[in-house]
Image 1 (cartoon, rainbow, N blue to C red):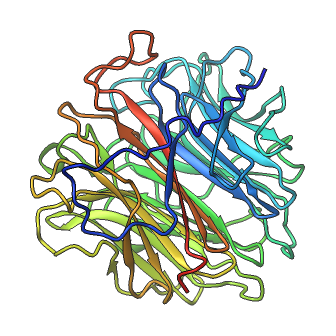
Image 2 (image 1 turned 120 degrees about the horizontal axis):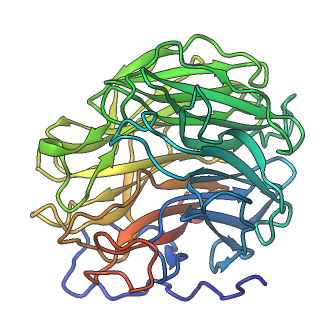
Length: 460
């Protein structure tokens, strides 16, 4: 049975007593909680159906689906069929295709390898894709295998951070294709792999390597991290990830059959913030890039955007660049957060989306500008209506959260936009010091997944 709990439960109309926000609120903002209290939720993803914008689907780990039939105002939890022989699943991502089918990619494993060296001593692990044809309410019983190891292979590797995306364009020659990219940790290197499905996610091709340069084999600065892909109106695929202290870019113009050699396009600071570069109250943070394209019809090869966060300014800031020539050249970085530079305040865990109807650019991120002590964490939505040249910042969360113990917020947030409406998903630390006794994960403070809605229709 589906859990038809109207997840307007947890709507965050919490009072912000004692907390004055310096930013204007996001227009028509609404924030709901979609995770449950019996398990720690984090690492969310969110997608909207371009054919029916009332359908919004959010995923979070441990693998769970929240779906909305009213444009993200309320959510219910779906019953997600298990994958026989595999544990729950994480590193989730979701995407709608051109026919309104929605796909969920998940990573499953029995154990990690050595600390930060996942391929060494790794066990059974694999990536799977599941599909829903009714807006996330129900899901196919069988999952498609992307790549999996049983744990006894002589060439056992460890797969990580899968990202599913689809060609939802109206006139693309590859409309309906489903794509997945991810990291493979090998004993002596890390590489980016890619696969595609041309049969609505039922089967996937043998993975191909799309990273020309390999990274180091540890899950740390020096490894490849953070694959993200996007599709233009003409079906072109663009992808990015971090390779050391650079952002790497590649593209495909044949539906993912082949890719151009990947190359570094932007110099950045290391993508992991830990140790001396850590963010107070957060166990770790990552600034790996996201890529998006202006996918408006009639604009083949539209403007490309990259966003990331790093500490070029000492504290962590969010930056954006753009390209109007298919990624051959990129603009100078623009600082997305609008607080004072060098103020010792961190903005981190950004995500990017471009509205396929308006071309407006949106970026979301955690934001501590309203706390001089750099501890209380709000959540901000930035918008650009001039192709990324300038950004207006809005308060999305209505009140901040703070964790006295290092909180694991996951490795990413997620954002999507359609026709002036914006949908974001992020993780917050709960105020209680410990999660409920029956929670699946008990280390550190509890966390919850929020989904935010904003509507810019009347702010033209």
